[in-house]
Length: 236
Image (cartoon, rainbow, N blue to C red; front, side, top):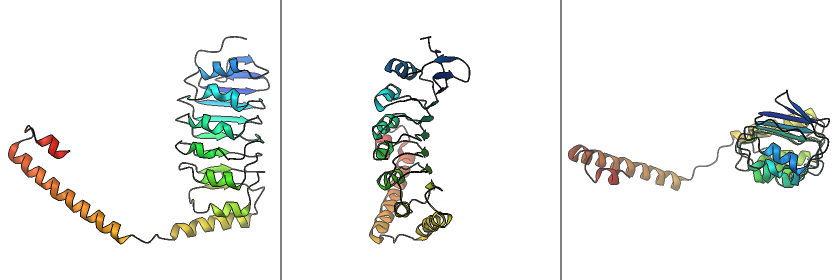
């Protein structure tokens, strides 16, 4: 196999060909660990998309930890829920497209809890209500594409408490059901949580104590000077 470019920001793999930055291309009919290790060595890669390539969880492991990866897609592959911890190791990942990986149910989505992922596409997968619940718990997720999956109307309504989440699944729900979901999101947003008065009182007392201590420190510092040995320790 030909040598890979030393640097590449965008890599597309389809029809048995690897294309680097819309330029250089290398024939790669079958995925192997060697190929994936070479791809994993492209530390500057920000985008990787493989369509119709039978990539498994084991094969994508060499991509773990790619520090600049932002947009990643493996469509019509052989991934399972075991792929999510691998994607979670990519600190800048924001867009994840896994359409057509029929073994993905969403059961491993909680691995992305600390990630920056804000868009996930799981069309034509086995995503179910359990996976939907995990997706809704992701702090940055704003868009979830779930066409032709196993999620139900009840499952969708159960995550309406997440007001930022947009679920795109027109093949599963009627316009009326989708609108009912958005209405429920808005209604839950309007509901105000009762304040814990004890916590409010403690917060006020803490703030007053801070102001008093700060005023005292400022007076002592003005009197003794910033170079006094007690100035910094007292501030800390």
